[in-house]
Length: 282
Image (cartoon, rainbow, N blue to C red):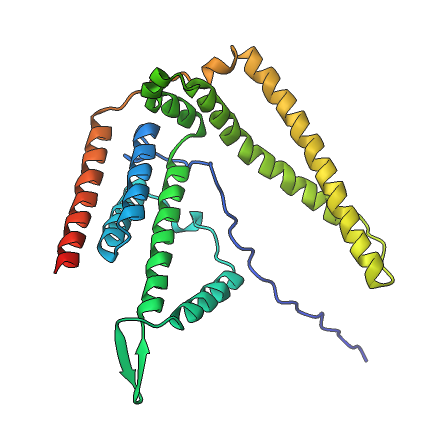
């Protein structure tokens, strides 16, 4: 008599999509071909607009502009990161606590008047945050990191009259943006290697806390070592290519498509401000 043992079937969860920053999506579109300075100006303009006019109309206009740009850039849905469950819980708690503030408008339910002012303000701030995050992600997914430093140097050229070190700032920004993805990969490799190492089983809580402290210290030491090694290698590569001046020098300038994109952005934002002002006056 033979018996067959059924192996325990473990539930396999699909790994979430990580947050990928400063890595452009392969492909070409009208948004990809825009000058990096144009995108930075549009981001700055929309950020200032939403800071001074955080109304529903202006947020809706900015959201429509961002969605149209995402559709034009052909960004796939798989490029978006997965939203963890704890974030939904935090948002729900924030919405509940904001709803307790009350305020106009008032809604009658079961003989009670409930103020939705605080909850609507929470929704407005959440929508504004999502628009700004989508705008930053759009720039990250459609812009080469090497183009941002020269664009900042070009846009900051008028500030040279004030004797500000614009070129040095542009070089520092370019180095930081180039090193950021590389260091993230290094940290992920270090963390994975650390998890694969055998760990002694702690006998009590005190040893467990001490083990965690030692792990943090080891990771910090390894991280500093890797960062210094990468910085030395990047310094040698920059020296071999002609120095830091090459990081802020780029012959690209705005074209007709860039002026069209900025004009559309100004018209949409201006229309949002005008409609918002009219509604506020009424």
